[in-house]
Length: 562
Image (tube, rainbow, N blue to C red):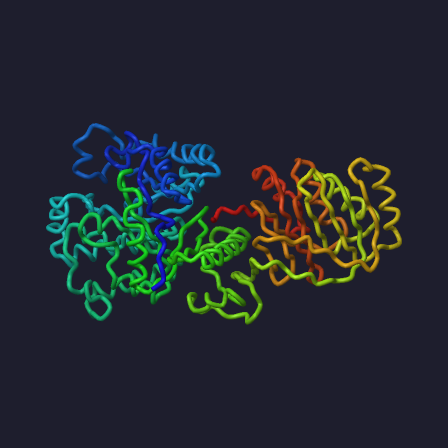
């Protein structure tokens, strides 16, 4: 039997650091939990915070205090800044994520309130939509007395659950564009029994069973994930959700997230392996976590080679999703797998194979990305081009393109390599020279002689590789690029003509953004570029928005997955 991981990339992680805004709700210090995670050699830690609630939605214990923490915003507003400071403090030691558990409080003031809270949750990695309170103001997960009061108001066990499912459906319909995950879908079982119709919902003709089937189908249709939450086990009522719900979710291809939903540092890391055993029992072999709202696929198995393959897959998903707007990101992509990745065809329903082509293709909305961890082979393509040895600093590559463009020469492909000693080399193949290459070289030697130690035009040269071990962007929309991925990559589609790419390169040079590597491709009159860069992300994004109509697409891709 394959060994399962001892660690999980949580979504519904640990509630902590909320101080006086949430009395006795996650009051441990964030730093204490990070230190514990590092001590356990965990690669990541996930924090979560509830969005503040309206005053009407309070537990009995909260009503008995004089602290108006339900409306208090201090901890909630400060949370993004505190997480950012933690990431800086522990940089290189651990990956720190945080999410928001968004409270559903009805479609009127509660909806507007919650929307305002999402804007205040800057840079959250994901948002869980949860129903904790009934419209009557009583909680589903409060005391037994509160549950009994709500049961009496509704008149029957079936009506109790029916109301909860109505609120779940209403939340998805109203919050569908704001959330990624549905929290603890069978939460009411904490205080009341599950009616027979729900226990046997897969076969029952009862209206409650049909409504629940509809709820699951709505989650699938909205491309949301389901929270597999170990807090129910800790509280003695079993994992949220029960196995029958999880099996149906798997049949509907609903991805699952896993989490412990703990509230105290002493429980950190509890039930990690058990959560993977639980989803495996329902037929899942992978789950998802989130970074910057983008899903990351995770294997349940302690298998190094498989984890590497998932890393390649996640980078491809990030590349594609960051080319799309937020509404388009919500749609689950289609996959094709080839070579060593063919085993994924059995894991991802409706995916297709690519034979011996050792790569993963991810596609949606007419766009595609192809990635691999195999070093691209040298095609030994014969080309004419410009070879340079130069200083590895901002503006040098721009100078080359600038001079060639001034002579009407278009660069067809590019190869760059940093020597990591302050120098770099480049080879720019050109599709025509108009007899002006010598003039371009003379111009560069006359104006930028201090930047270049060698600059020659080579005919019938073998296009160099400059490849090393890493994850590669092979293709963008089917156009070959072969860029080794680094932390920040710019992807563009633009009009393929002399001087167009110069606009971007000049903009980067003007803000001291260094180019690490560059790959170019074309399809008819459309040019493609993939550029690995170093520099301030806000500055780069500001430049990309000013490139003009000749750029059909220009995106900065920042990698957050591990």
